[in-house]
Length: 534
Image (cartoon, rainbow, N blue to C red; front, side, top):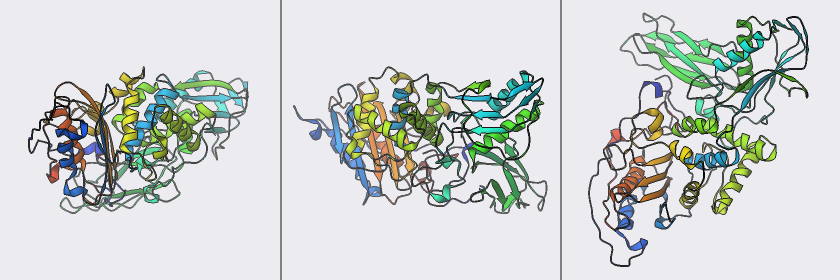
């Protein structure tokens, strides 16, 4: 493990090395109640079963907001402090993703353009070359390489001016409100820019992957490799290979306000390569640097020195262009893997599309208007960012339930629903953040939901079909608990719904598992490994 885990919210980058052990969610007890004739929802056995689950001592002194509704009619079958405003963590992404599908459209694509207003003299471009982003969080080094190849294919071999970055589609505010200062180098809290770069096909934009491999013998300097290779990030390696039986205390961090990544501590000889995803300080400069290296690799001479950041001039001609995947495709890594940077790029893109301002304020105002149009009581909602990383976000379970119900009537609902994590689906691209939860229960491969985790805040909201084939909508938001985790409490609610005939009044109650190995490490700010997926 290359970084120690602190209670909030620093994480260790272990996703590539494994997953949280499968959740031990076997039903601990089975209880059956029969409703009296004509009983209303508050009198049913469902209320007793869920109340029992929420009586778990791990929630003592905490706050709970829970709603269960019939998906077809909207009838509320269970409500517990439904209007209480609690931190939803990454359940915030439900509002962001629905607004993105509605306001941008399922087919929305970002473009990354290379432009010039200079003149050509043979193979020489007299003037500047501009690299312009529009907010695409999925652009890879390979995409910049193809752009460079396309520039070279036009016959340009030399640029007399400068390579200029244009990230003006978004404002210059890089970090969200109340994001933790000690998350500065954490990949899940990377700066937001309209011109950025992802190092992998999870599309963790604004980050670089640092791989540390031990030397052959104790005392040897470990080898360190960056993905993508680049000249923007600097390495300061002070780490040492230690004996095989020595404790590992490798630490990989970026120095405050710089692009220098320090690699310190010890890594045991014979240990597996350690990977860390580290947020860069300046994503615009990072992407432009990788593009400049690609131009040189394709035989295009680019001047060294500072690269200005400004808008491409009016009338600049497009030399090469890259289009992103459509929004419907992006929804999968965004929602399955709970990618914070996707949420924030979408929020600013919504703002630019709706009001011409690529800002958090403009984007969040548009999301709020969309929520209100769906019947959500926005007086009980505060949204400070698109991802849920901010602890200023407040959503009641009633608002999340109303949102989930409204989404069912949209023409794009099937595609959006398909992007939600699926309980106990072993394929990471399907199960996502629910991959190891509710296994060996009626909720497995049945429940779909958005997870959410911050220290002291956990949420699970989505859809499940009960034992009689009735589709239900649920939202469980839990806050202010001191226990290591309350994930199994959420799971027990959903397993109860999946096991029961909610219309017929026969309820099979599930007790939350207390197995320590079944619970994710609650010292993690987010819910699974490579940690930090919120």
